[in-house]
Amino acid sequence: MTSTQISATTAAELQIVQATHRYARGLDRLDPEEALSAFTEDAVWDATAVGLERFEGHEQIRGFFERDAEAIASQFHIITNHVIEFDSDDRAHGTNYVFSEGQTNSGAKFKAVALNEDRYVATPDGWRIASRVISALIPPELDGFDA
Image (cartoon, rainbow, N blue to C red; front, side, top):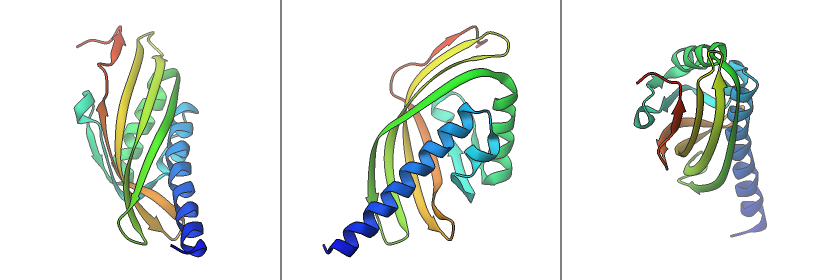
């Protein structure tokens, strides 16, 4: 591998990690547009394994992020332990862990540790998340949520 290839790979990895962090920061700032900016137009966001829904495309994902922002009083997401593998010059897949905790406007509290399984695509605007499948690593804690 040449230094040019290493530099291109490092730049791509940095853009991918930044996209995952932009997603988390957007959620935590209750800014659906910032969170959405991490995704491709036709992206899939799937949290059915943790009891949420599956959304396809910017409009559906934006709707979920907007409803989430309206319901949340405060929250944080820590995304770490990225493992990224390149399938080609413009496609990659990988995993990362997320730790999230927060409280809704109604006082319900939540805490979750999950695995994000992602697919990434290089776009004219940089690398974006094309698909995110979220699954719990440990059972989530939901205090005050109705089952």
